[in-house]
Amino acid sequence: MMGILVGVIPKFSLLPWVIGIIAMLLPLNLVALAVTIVIFSFAGPLLDPWFHQVGYSVLIDPALQEFWQSMAQSETFIWLQLDNTVVTGSVVAWLIASLPGYFICKAFVLTLRPTWNRIFGVSAGVANHPTVMSS
Image 1 (cartoon, rainbow, N blue to C red):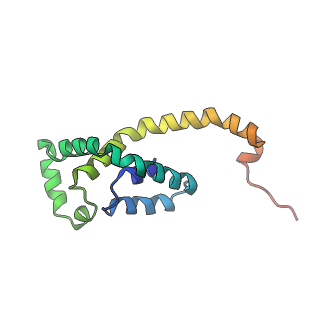
Image 2: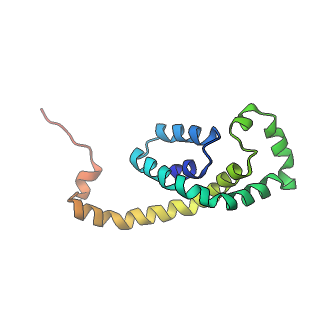
Image 3: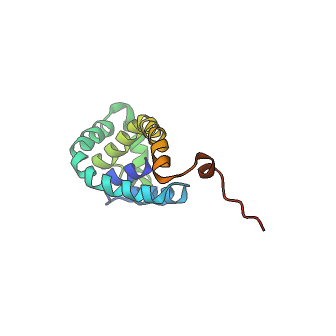
């Protein structure tokens, strides 16, 4: 899910770089992270018109005006480019899609894992336990 966020956010802001560094520090599969970033970097520009609409509606929402005005006083806010409609829209869309996306990905992995283990000959007991070296 972190790779999707880094992939869809425009790369001209500091935000995808910060999220990418945080993702690399977490115990994630870095190959899957890199592949996801590359795939969604190509899909991101196709979604930019929709992200613009979402970001615009969030940024002009009267209920959030005080929040955005207080955030605009921060240097970090400016560096992260959260005043950009596409950046804000992509973050909001990712936040909304992350929970259902998590459950979809989890179901996909749980469905695919037995087939993957059978194809590559991985035993369930061996895959889940670290190797113990005896002397």
